[in-house]
Image (cartoon, rainbow, N blue to C red; front, side):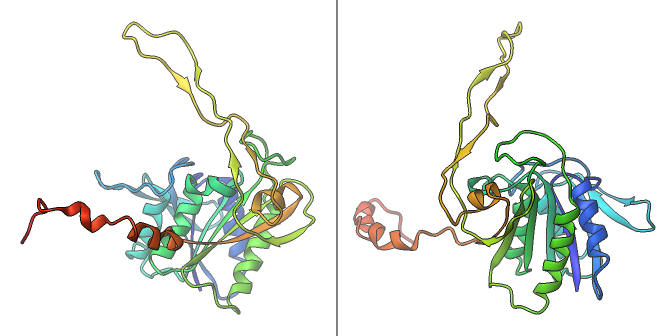
Length: 270
């Protein structure tokens, strides 16, 4: 199995390096690394289209190396799929992220975006994220212990070789930052954002102001069976996510709006 290891925290991030070492212990696995050259957290599904991308080989100090790019996590997956390393990956491993990616937060996450790109390209994918040590589901900074997460993630990759991955579905895995009490297959939870508009200083001579608007201790709906509740209780949350955003239940409602009638006689004809 050929695995592409990537992330959004950068190629030198301890989470990625812990995962790399654990994956290299698996039999019959080749680990390729293509990751951003610096932090790209919260970059979502951004791609680089208006400038060339730079790539540099980086030595890891243990006889192995990877490739760093000034692109995004999604760019990294495209590099691998288009042949930068010679062969197409059989699996995308994105992470281990420094901080949880739970509930609505996954839409902002560069970690999850890289795994989603695998699904777009027909490549099975995992996204792995580690909660800050000591728990808490806000965005506070802190320390991380990746030992358990790296071992579990490697064993999950090993396990998947004997099971069929759900079609067009990535597996989003979040590890608690407290003592692990179990593993739970979950749905995505609902974040409650408590962002505020905070002006940092007085306007400068040109009238420009600086603000902070994100990251002020979000909460969440306490609904059993969700990833947010599972991690809050010390359980590893394993969540299948697919890319189809269509509201299939809403199709017939829209068809009943009489949209054809809006064309009138002014619609262009061939």
